[in-house]
Image (cartoon, rainbow, N blue to C red):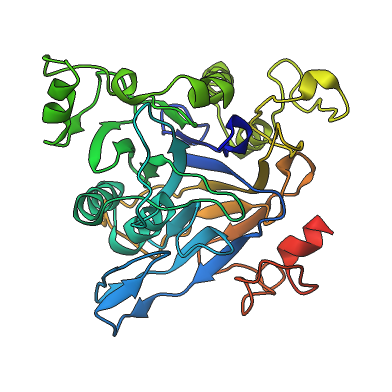
Length: 371
């Protein structure tokens, strides 16, 4: 596994005190292998009959019913890189790289945990706890790449119409913190010692590594140097944070689009793949570049969540707006509005009966974009 094989996604959330209209915004760039179809998919609510559900690699117990889902879903994976449910819960995940070996035994992928959280959580806190519970029961692990093997642990940004959390993991170990103002996750561990809650298994693990304190940096304990550095996760996280801070109290959908289209902080849209200086750079809007830049932004979404109803804290009839590309390269893509998770236009979902097809299809909106 080479450094260039890493995916370089970014997810961020803007809470009411930072947004223009007091509504929460969640945004994600999904970076996968080039030509790995990354479909926007609507999955309707359903009463489940089977006692178990087949995820990407393993089966887990099923629940009685699941809500409407809007997913940004790689073609071969049961789970998703990003998604929202009809209750206004949104989740994005990121690969994080540890100095300790990543789990290789097939278990739940981070993307599977993401979808399971959306299927079983009516609030961000519920979805967070679902992910933690399933992580502790079944673990995470298995190959996360389509044509090349890549293994990693996961971080999650989980939000609803009221609040947001960041959850970071290593195998079955986890910590989470509540987001204040803005929250950004990239391909790096970011929670230091400010976590709000930690798994009981964290402390014996830390003690075995020579840490005696009860409060310490989760990121310092687990983060590796090579992949975190050359994947530019910290640099991308810093650039996104800086842009969001510059517009504190006035951030809107357009600002989020600008960030997802960013190549360089100084000149956001300037990108020339023929320049030697571009080789190996991992940008927010990612373009494939051979053996050095082996990932590409294959899908993007911005969720503009509705204001919550104080009289009904869990409401599935309020309409959120999700701005999706359903194409790669957001810098040259149009963000299309989807009002409510169940109103994905037929034009965007035209290949809905064949979304798992990894090969070119003239009826696929995503593949039309590639063509």
